[in-house]
Image (cartoon, rainbow, N blue to C red; front, top):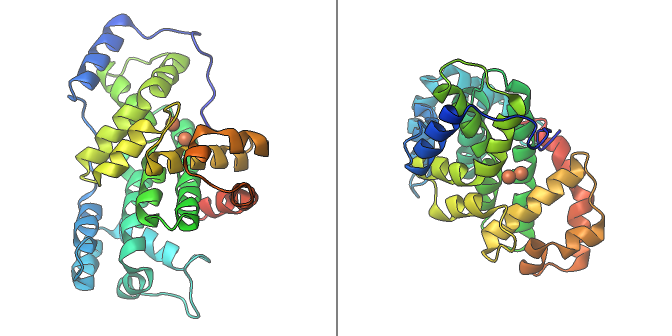
Length: 281
Ligand SMILES: [Fe+2]
Ligand SMILES: [Fe+2]
């Protein structure tokens, strides 16, 4: 269920923990999750026009978990061709630069970067939702003939500030258990700006960072931010909080994207399929 459910004002964070955390967050002194080395290599290598499949294969050979995950996805219904992929080399060729880039980030997020002890179920829910938002954002970008990769990345990372806040608070509390509602309330308040900080730390395009920071803005006018905000609504619609079509149409993000009502209707109809696809990644 997304967003993680909690009661506002039900509990308070210890004042010293809250103060230390907010100061660190404001001064950008929080320890941010690190992109695993293999993912970082894939991101930088595939960004070149003459990228080398051999270098990507090399990076993957040094990271068995990432390689295994990538092989599984290359063999999933979304990518599987006539014959199954059996080697890393084949997987790299079949997926291509753009999918490799997306998967390098997806897998980094799913596996190691965002562990949050005691909040595993909440982080899993945020992650499942984020993948659905990534797929919806990519579909919106496709309809608008805009950059599908930026839309996917911004959608994928838009809510990753949630685990960053949860992790950061636990670290500041040095193992002392914190009240769940209060932690999630802070995460809701701060996740957009801290998610932007992660994107910048990972050297992702600035447009992606800006879309993450602005995804809860009242009236996003930048097209990528509006795409993520609209995809956020679509994913919630598909994930069990149905939005009536009038409400989807009336969203400032939908309006700023200038989408025709039949396009919005088509996207709303397609969203459950994308939600189900997110489960296979
Ligand atoms: Fe959000
Ligand atoms: Fe979201």
